[in-house]
Length: 63
Image 1: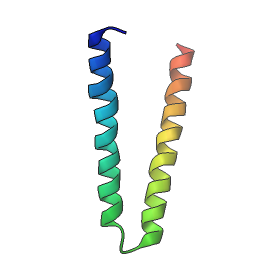
Image 2: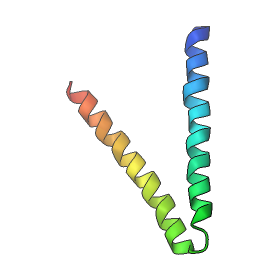
Image 3: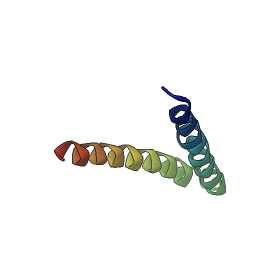
């Protein structure tokens, strides 16, 4: 892996993941007065993300 590919991995993958995680964490903390809503939000966020990834994989495999 060359230096440019490593840079893209770090900037897009790692740092992008941190910003996504922190956004979910902030939204969850805003919902903390109602724990049921907070838990539902976290579960739904990850479930929808996994389903969207699976759907994207299926669509790209057909091309």
